[in-house]
Amino acid sequence: RILIKLGELHRTQKEYSKAEPLYRRAIAILDWNLGPDDLEVATTLNYLANVYSHLDGHYALAGALYHRVLAIREHVLGPDHPDVAASLDTLGLALYFPNGRLAEGEPLFLRALAIRKKSLGPDHLQVAVSLSTLAFLYDAQGRYEKAEPFYLRALTIREKQLGPDAPDVLQTVDNLGMLYRLTHQYDKAEAFHKRSLLTLEKIRGPDHPDVAAALMRYASVLREMGQIDEAAGLDAWAKKIKGKAKDGSKQ
Image (tube, rainbow, N blue to C red; front, side, top):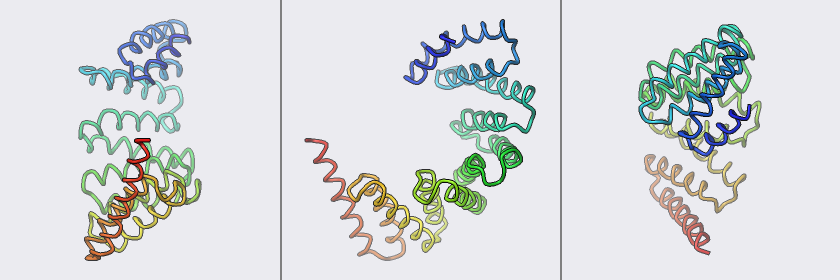
């Protein structure tokens, strides 16, 4: 176990070349003592795959390990276990999203969503994670009509489970605002960007840099709606906040 802990220490510090031999040694020991299909072996393989996904030239090896983790979990836990859904998400996010292979990731994310709905119930936060992942995938593909209901359903679940001001709720609100702006649904975009702005002012204070960013997003929508003066006022407000932050960082 000490090897795994040391590996985690180096991995979290992004010292991947130092973490790699520690994980490999730990896996060899676990394989010998527990067998190759043990869940602890799968967990450590997952750590090692993450390391390889950050090392140049090890993309194929990372993929092979992620697939092995998935196979172990399916074999030991059954095909409908939440940990299997987690492996499907990891496989898709680590291998397909960063490399623009979105179409290959879609069936993995859809299966993860189905597993979570079945095993955890339709209103579980992990279901919202799957919905949001799929929404982002469709958004990235320009399939906005497909993305919208996934974002909206994720938002409903997160609001119910976390409350209206939670970070995950705010992220989904921002994503919907951007989607509606891209699809020229400016009334909806304005409503979501305004909600984001008011929430950030409430939870982070009126002079936070995130508020400045929200003001600029809101101003962009107003400008596209022809509300030039209002947009200019928000841009000036954002600039003032940034100036305060810059002056504060010099002190």
